[in-house]
Length: 317
Image 1 (cartoon, rainbow, N blue to C red):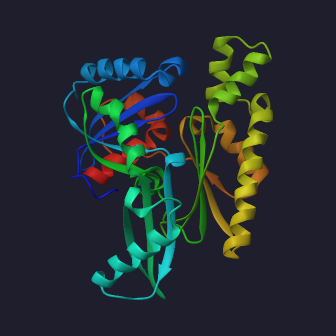
Image 2 (tube, rainbow, N blue to C red; image 1 turned 30 degrees about the vertical axis):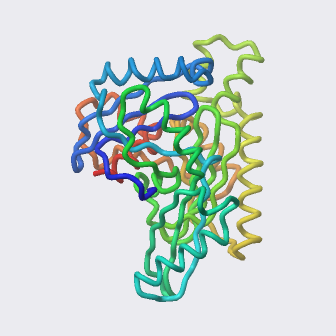
């Protein structure tokens, strides 16, 4: 996304609990791999770099080019509507809007944008991050042996990876190990993005406190039932409803056509069914591996875990 870099063939998603790697050659997946990362290692940069270095050597990508994404809490994403204008004028108009809206000095920012025609002008989504945060975030990848050639943001990765072509407002919930990103899209543009510090780890901690064994917890996390996870799922729902209410008040729109679940928690269909019941909007869990050719079919059911990595790889392909 950010215009400092050239495209790359690998999408590498470093989440809060795992790292996922995707290589794409057209519709053929040349590489799909993941490694879970313990919390203690994720919080210790030296341990993280060591784990990443060993993993990258194991899957033979040491020294390869990679596209990574910067977490939601470090990025700034906005969508604006502009009147019709030539490309040259559009660049200056976006530059002015970025300067006007950024919460930090424009000189400290790296930003880029995508633009699409609309009935009444041009819809522009721009993404920005502070240069110092980008450099700090990509440092472990570089130390572990990858060449980071591009940086993107999560919502735009999901637009590429998931079928978000329906009419109306679409809610995308990307629920990982320790965070949930709530994105509201319309016409493949990002209207609202928000990151909440809660994810699958909160469900695990609840189950541990209730005395379930490790094997039982793994089974519940994969297969349900939702009743066992209800307390934490209701916390997710409160944050989702807050975002919906804010969106309705801000954009004066009340109709939502679909909720899409992705991320590791989405693999559990009991979560989808519970959200369908409570949100009263059709809820789907699309598999981003659909329509892609892969050698290792055992990974296909884990597709929702790879959504961001696939979006990164599609940006690079």
